[in-house]
Image 1: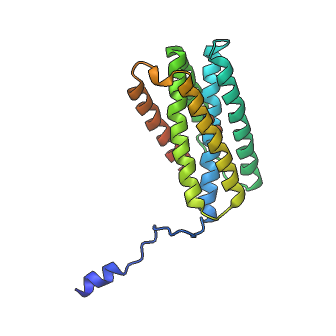
Image 2: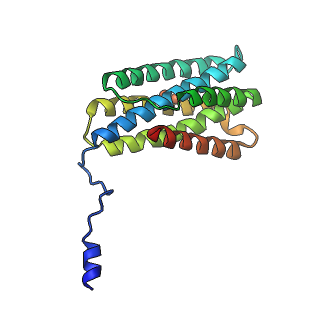
Image 3: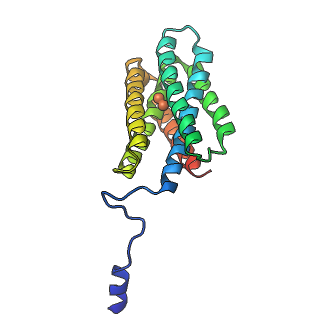
Length: 191
Ligand SMILES: [Fe+2]
Ligand SMILES: [Fe+2]
């Protein structure tokens, strides 16, 4: 009985309450993974544009790529300003992002768009969970994340308008890209 009581009173260190402040370490990890993610996104669009060139979807992709460039430049600046250690996995995202973009574009324009929908849905949930974790902490970072999250949702909608969901094998393709994107987030937060 006394043992049970002792167990029940053990504080749950991992639990967060509304109003808790995100630690400096947690914020550094957020900036690290966000820079990595924006870098990966920019590389995906580089790969897509290398294949799509002047096709009908290319101008929409070019617009999204320009926004990703803005996102990346902002996180590059934050990493420098706050002296955050960048991910050691940039060389991997350099290749994997480009390969994913090029491979999906080679399948079809719609598959390239399906790739964007899958990635943006994962990024949306990632940015939403960061905003929750930040709570009232670091209003500057929260404003950047909220701003970019709105762009990512716009990219998802653009890709859906271009027929992403009509790609043959869409559920399987989407699930595979989402799994890869979540793994990339997990790794870039830590390494
Ligand atoms: Fe982005
Ligand atoms: Fe995006």
